[in-house]
Amino acid sequence: MSLQTVAARIRGFICLNAHPGGCAENVRAHVEIARKGAASGAHLGDALVVGASTGYGLASLATTVFGYGARAVGVCLERPPQGDKTASAGWYNLAALSQIARESGHDVAIINGDAYTDAVKAETISLLKRRNAKLDSVVYSLASPKRTDPKTGVTHASVLKPLGAPFVSRSIGLGNDQVTTVELPPATAADVEATVKVMGGEDWELWIDQLLAAELLAPGCRTVAYSYIGPELTYPIYREGTIGKAKAHLEKTANAISAKLRASGGAAYVSVNKALVTQASSAIPVVPLYISLLYKIMKELGTHEGTGEQIARLFRDHLAPGRTPTLDAGGRIRIDDLEMRAEVQQRVTALWEQVTSENLFALTDYAGFKQEFRSLFGFEVPGIDYATPVETDVAL
Ligand code: NAD
Image (cartoon, rainbow, N blue to C red; front, side):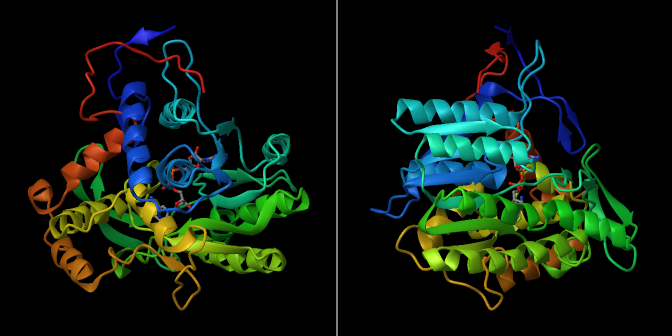
C-alpha cells in the first residue's frame, strides 16, 4: 500500500512520475472511443500489440479489444511502482485497461520487458501457445531511444538529426515556454545506421519471423507498423532526417513481411499516422511547435483527432476483417490525410513565421499541447481530484 498525493514532476519533455487515477481516466476515454468507433459486426480473434502501453500502441490495444472483441496480448517496457515512487504512465494505463477488460469479460494479458530481446519474444510466444492463440492482428508500435541487437549484443542509440547540412529552425523550449532557434548538427553515417537499427523494420520482421515459425499467425493475419511523413517544414528533422531513414526502412520491411505472409493470405502494412502529442513525439525538436499550430487549426476546422480516433478510423476503414485497405502510391495506408490537407498546411506555414514567445499562446494551441502532454502522465485530467491521496502501488 502506498497512498499519496501525486503532483507532476516535469523536466522539459520528460515527466518523471505519473498519476494512476488520471491514467485510468484516460484509458476509460480510450475504451469509449474504441467501442463507438468500430465497424459494426466485425470481430477479431487474437491480437498482439507490441508497444501497447502508451500513444498509438495503447490506442491499438483498446481498439482491437474493445472495438473488435479481440483476446489480446500487449508487450511494453514500463517502470513498476517502487516504494513512494510512482510507476510510469504506461504501467498505470495497462493496469487500468486490464481491469476494465476483466470487468467487461475481455481477455488481455501483458508482458512487461524489452521487446527487442529474444527472451521477451520467447516469453510472448510461449504465452500465446498456452492460450492456443492464432493471431489475426499484430500491431507493431515501438518507439525507443535504443535497441540492443540480439545477434551481435551491440546497443544502438537512435538520434534525431538532419542529413547533410545543419538544420536551423524555430522550436519551443518546453522548460520555459519560449520560442527559440535550434541548430541541429548533421548526422554521421553511423548515426543513420544506428537510428535505422532502432526505429527501422528489423525488429518487426524478427517478431513476425518468430511468430510464423511458431505457427501462431492465423490465415489472413494482418500486421501493421506506424510511420510519419509530415509537411516540408519538418522534412529536415523528420522525413529527410535520421528518423525518416528509419521509417523508409520500416516501409520497405512491410514488403518483405508481406511476401512471407502471402501464402497464408496475410499482409503487412505501414500506416502513416497524424502528428500527435506522445512521449516519443514530444522529444523531437521543432515538432512541439508544429503540433501546437496543427492542433490550433485542426480544432478550428473540427478535424482534430487523437490517437484513439486515429486508430479507430484505421481499423474501421482499412484493417477490420472484411475491409480492403486503401493504399497510396507508395503502398501505405494514410490516416494523416486530414493533417496533410492543403488548407491545413497553408495555414500552418503562414503562422509559422509569425510565432514569437509573446504571441505563442494566442497564435497556437501550445496550451493544448501542454495540457495533453501532462495528461499523458495522468495530470490535468478533467474529473480527477489531485488533492486526494491515491494508491500508487498498483499491480499490472
Ligand atoms: P510512445 O512513446 O507513446 O509509445 C512507445 C511504446 O513502446 C510504449 O508502449 C513503450 O512501453 C514501448 N516500448 C519502448 N521501448 C520498448 C522496449 N524496448 N520493449 C518493449 N516496449 C517498448 O510512442 P508513439 O508516439 O505512440 O509511437 C509509436 C509508433 O507510432 C512509432 O513507430 C512512431 O514513430 C509512430 N508514430 C507516431 C506519431 C506521433 O506523432 N506520435 C505519428 C506517426 C507515427
